[in-house]
Length: 124
Image: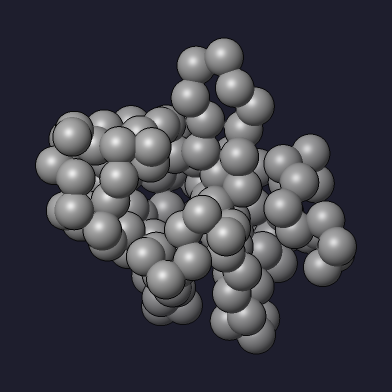
């Protein structure tokens, strides 16, 4: 399974960005696609996830109401629409695929496949 993240960039606080994650290969090996983010010196942080089979979505409290995850089955793609961005959203964002169970969705160790990361910078 290959994942490719794109869509990062520089945006002012309050602005919006949409990240894309293209999924290819043996996609049946992934039931969840998630977004994590990481800043230097910090652990990777769960942002959001979507279950491919049911479209059930999950969000970190810090982004709930501002970010929306969605998918396009025909394109094998997952998107993260980020609105009302804050400087603290600045990070490298990674998309990941795997088959976690509900209680482990937010744990990066339960994802087997990772994209290369895309940098989001939010200026104040």
